[in-house]
Length: 445
Image 1 (spheres, rainbow, N blue to C red):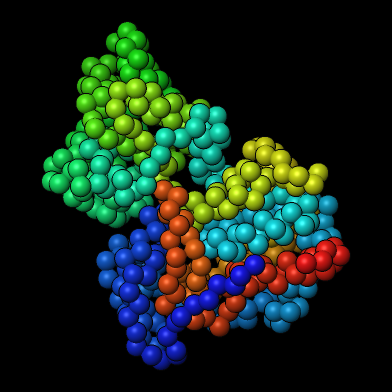
Image 2 (image 1 turned 120 degrees about the vertical axis):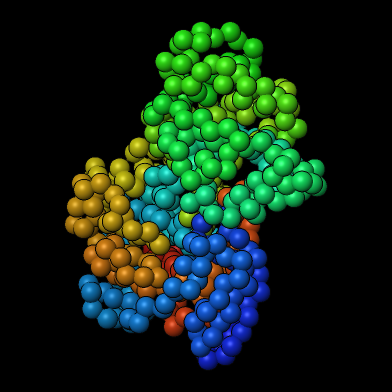
């Protein structure tokens, strides 16, 4: 496997890093100009408020690169101990990956395969239902560049990009002037569906405040209208909280569009219905192609969560929650997803990569994780790294470490790091752990 090389400024040097990539959110904006001074980013031109916070508040942790049982150790000792933990368990788990470059993700999947373990990504607690729906219904998709140049009807369902993806409106979906929408915002119709009036609602031409936990009913209302099925106005109003005439107006606009796009978020995937909601939205998108061109895309959160889905899919055939215990990949959300393997007390060792389950998993899952030996890789100290048997402080991807990440539309973007870190990258740590795991297992090559 080829290593990833970088070109970064020497210590104390003033440098402008042009077209750097921001890995804070799934937009993965790759047009940021960074001013680096004395190994500190002082300016981040074109970055949004979240991107500026990501770059300007970046500080390298002044601590040992490796801790074993909370005590400083050499990296070599850490690699050895990590390999012993992973090869010594009967049900090892690997989790996280969404804030690591694709090169490191590939190695993590390989390690999981060698140890007959279970690998899962943070997708399982956000857009996991969408991953299941893609398999059941399929996905009519496009790149964000196509949205910019063609999209004249833009719908956001259960998503609040004004706060979660601040440049989404201005760079990709609503404001930019494109080849077939030369007047930008004036050539577009924006519809936002949500249970509350978010900041994004201010940008909408039509805001539909749907009843909580009624997304499935709303989507099937639109599906029925797309097929010309007659509906009872009273039932529609009672079920969705929105008049049938309003739904019909939206459907008329959707049919009149030349290129329609539906972006959906966790407001759809993590409420009642879950994967059935995503399936309904994807099926609606498919139905609309009987009338005009329509596509759908999930609004992804972490900087490389889309990359994690892609890499795990390449290597195993499934996007997350994959078990290798029988020597071949098996996929079963609810059984092989990390929140469940921990809460059920099944995992007996593991590796947490660029994630913090100790801060956001259920109490039973956190308690079990604390009771088993595990390795943690993170650029900063977290509750998960503090409780780890082996904790590696790693370089921050995109700022200190190179690699490749995937934008939310499945387009790969290269990283241009700003300056070096004294800590190893995820790729370096995982490559060294893999080498030792293979040696213990007696695997050559």
